[in-house]
Image (cartoon, rainbow, N blue to C red; front, side, top):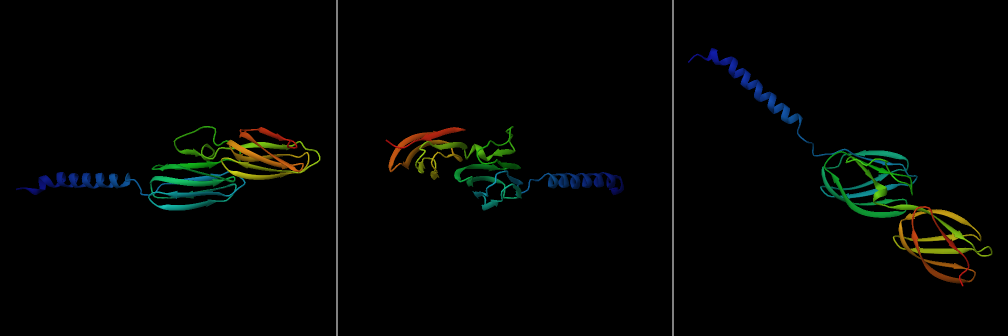
Amino acid sequence: MNLKKFRPLLLFGLALVLLLSATRAAFAQSDLVRFTVNNKSDKVFTLRLTGPETLYLVIDPNSAEVFTPKRGEYNFTMFSCGAYADGELDLTSIKTMIVPACGSGGPAKDTDQKIDASDTIKLVKVTLENKATNSAMVVVMTGPGTYVFSLKAGQKANYTIPRGDYTVTYYACSSSATRVFTAKANKTLSLSCPK
């Protein structure tokens, strides 16, 4: 048997096998995935992830951080602008989470790679107005969160709270009263002396 005739064919076959195995290795998917959190708010943002691994991420105000967690599906608990929210997060591909300024919306265009934290924590700016001109007022709002506000006589103040229905108990003019308020964007809650 004359091996000289088959040598170029054997070398070509060996080169082809090496090339195919190198190409396969080059396209193999990493166990880690790039996850960026862009915190555009003036508050610290925290995110606890549980899934293929457990992570507790803290992102300073007005900053962005890049993380490389294990690829997979995660459950999360986030805290932003005074509110908590839970949900699920798919980190099987590269993602960027945008945390907008408290009470505002996130990215104008949704994509598979961008996640708007304000879709999970639905915060709205509301105005509380103390119409009692001769008495300070304490307002306790209980609903998606519990908040206590103190207003001077005749004061109007803006706050950012989770959207939803609240039971409002307020104390002014040596008396108290309770009512219901639905917090929506730019809505005003005007309160005067309870009757």
